[in-house]
Amino acid sequence: MAKKSKILLIYTGGTIGMVKDYKTGALKTFNFNKLLNHIPEINQLNCVIECISLKKPIDSSNMNPSNWVFLAEIIENNYLKFDGFVVLHGSDTMSYTSSALSFMLENLLKPVIFTGSQLPIGDLRTDAKENLITSIQIASSIENDLPIISEVCLYFEYKLYRANRTTKINSEHFEAFSSPNFPPLGESGVHLKFNKNLIFKPKVKEALIVRKTMASDIVILKIFPGIKEEVVRSILLIKNLKGVILETYGAGNAPNDKWFILLLKEAIAKGIQIINVTQCAGGSVIMGHYETSTQLQKIGVLSGFDITTESAIAKLMYLLGKNIPKNEFRILFESSLRGEITKIE
Ligand code: ASP
Image (cartoon, rainbow, N blue to C red; front, side, top):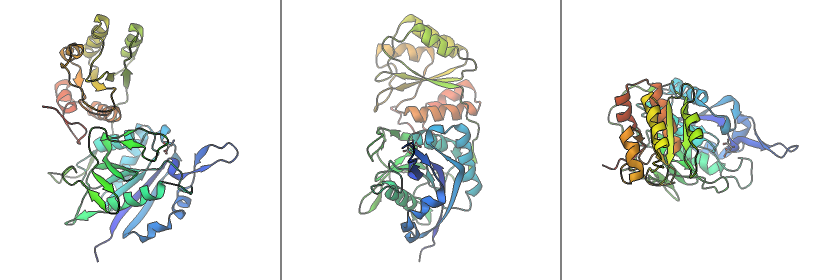
């Protein structure tokens, strides 16, 4: 019989483990051990599962970079002991956390699968069981003695995605996530199928490095028709601001008003990194395609190509945390580090 995979289940909180407070009617987090009692099916899986939980499980709206570091450290401290990791996380910020981890865990050679649910595990119609059981199966899938997945993924409602390509699209449907610019890495139906040509294949086998400095002096500036000069100015003048995700229209277009371009130019001159990311759900920034993005390109705004905003935030925090020279920053941000962008050459 094949050797049993060892999986570490990391519980951070989220709906999956919540119960209803009958006094207020609101959902609140509860004890993790009780959570596992709800899924005796887990014992039928051909793997050894150990669990670890945040001392105080949280609604993922309360996630922040310190929690990400804590999570990355759990993986780091248990990396050699386990074959794979499943992270139970609230769906609200799952795309942010999993994108962040995809950058923080350098040279990752093992699966890290994020999952959660729209209904608590104790609910009669819950989606938690399938999400959890299949995530464990994915994390323990091996071929020729090697894990099939060796990257950070997100599994939800029968689909396995590259985590840093995902975005939460629905707060009610079981299909809560989508990966608008990259196909799923796998699908669960009668059989568990992997799209092996899309899965990341590590070229070198080096020791895991966990980057723990995430610079959060950044902002998302979403433009809209009528955005005021004072607003843009006061955002760009924020003390210690290091980076801006500029959410633009369509293929990366923004107003070409003089004041707007000038404010961005001044910010760039001060060393602030500005990244052009589209507000569209799908598609890529192509700077220079329209006149309304030519100026942005000229003054040194970087292209996020088809990156999601969640992933752009994580990548910006990660690269700024590395304190690299300006030129190198541009090259790295505009390259695919973990499969997070598709570059149109
Ligand atoms: N508010 C919850 C959370 O993100 C929602 C969920 O788990 O789906 O923690």
